[in-house]
Amino acid sequence: MNDSTITLPWLVIRQDDNGNRYRVGRYATRAEAQKIADSLDSRGHKQLYWVERIGQNGASSID
View (tube, rainbow, N blue to C red):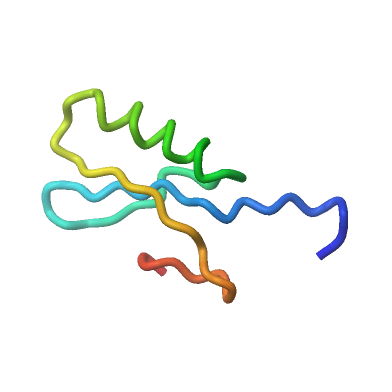
């Protein structure tokens, strides 16, 4: 990785009523990702939103 590479290690994940999981977006900070997840969650839909960090190998729980 060099200085021009932007790292976005934080994911917002959505789980629908059927248990399907989707990446909503990638973010540089946990706070930024949490703000998005909270905003989406406050809309009152039945989907579940949460934040997780991508592991050292680039994997998340939905890979």
